[in-house]
Image (cartoon, rainbow, N blue to C red; front, side, top):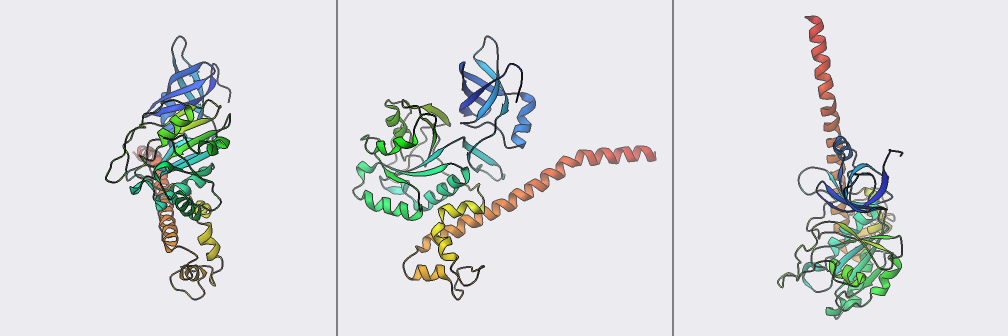
Length: 340
């Protein structure tokens, strides 16, 4: 792409329609060119934290105009909150996704929630890594590691303590120069505290969790990129209370490879695992080899993905119908004028 007087830059933070981008000339405040705003949204190319963009710096100002978004090598998305079936890109051009959970009790540790994050991570094109924070207040860390390993086959699992600066060396291989890691997890699991520990100073605001349910308050209010001393880049994200799926059926394979392994052994290819003869999935559950909660979660996420696909197809049909409505109206008026 060759646009006069433009340079490449990376989006380091976003807040509604305002962005901060960093390029060779430093950090600039940026906005999208007015004529492009609607088109970028329609094409799913609205800038997100981590995106590489083409900008036109404004002479004599610390501002720029975003002219284009360059192709992404990965993107972590979810369905935007609300009734509309719209994709919300959480982070782009990410190499590794740190899925952070807390080990301090309450709802900070939830296997079913981790399965949802994991499915979205496989969909993103980045490599997932499970990070169990607050190991310093958990006496049975190994048991939690085994539980997470059981729902995340083949995915690295690391127990760390941001407060004690313990176990952080296990994260170093993912944070090498030029690599980008996104931190994802619920409020209160310690994402910002972990990033502070990796930075070596208190850059990100942190807050206490509630004593009754161990849920945290939102201390991170926007997605932003931060450069680590070793050269790696991290993307901090606000805690997500609502994780709506934005994935395809194939993305369930990585998260539920154990369920699908047994399903391939079923007598019937279309086995519903509801008592059909020769059901290997039910046999595995009866023999204690497969947790029934895994099958329930597999079905639930699969149903959400199918529903999402149907809604998306419906929205696409409505969009096409609305797109052609003005043209049809114009043709009708032309034909009427000819008859007159």
